[in-house]
Image (cartoon, rainbow, N blue to C red):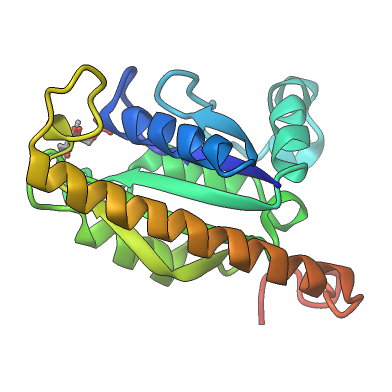
Length: 201
Ligand SMILES: Cc1cc2nc3c(=O)[nH]c(=O)nc-3n(C[C@H](O)[C@H](O)[C@H](O)COP(=O)(O)O)c2cc1C
């Protein structure tokens, strides 16, 4: 199966990107493929209403990404905590890409913090980021705390934190893969009707 990895940081070479690389490697080790959209390394322009008027520049920017996302059956949504919030870049992602590419596909949320934060983005994503796009966040999520001390190649990791982080990420990705199989049936069922309920119920 193919998975999309959305790196929600607004920094180039971020802690979240490092987590994304680990997820890509782990998915590959499990026989899957992945596409990573790193919003820090390759920022999307901020949404404006010319998108809805069919602006050609927007089409050229979003079209290739949209094709990649559409071919993904499940997602890993990685959000650092910025001042206790989901970064604007990730909110912008959910404005730019909707139910056509994300709808009724499962996603494992990973929150990232340099310290002991990370709970707020989980709560915010679960509360406010699925309604129109219909992404389905799985019940499991991972909080990567002390991101500087884990998932480093070359051995500079805190052993205890590393074990805790990897255990949870691996389990979260395994659960995601099973939800991905299950939700394919929902999308194929013919029941989904985004025409009647375009903005959610
Ligand atoms: C603008 C900004 C705000 C931040 N606010 C928080 C915060 O509220 N809580 C927290 O635990 N870490 C916070 N951090 C630190 C991040 O946890 C740290 O940068 C970590 O590496 C994850 O972000 P990154 O993926 O952008 O690197 C903040 C970082 C930035 C750049």
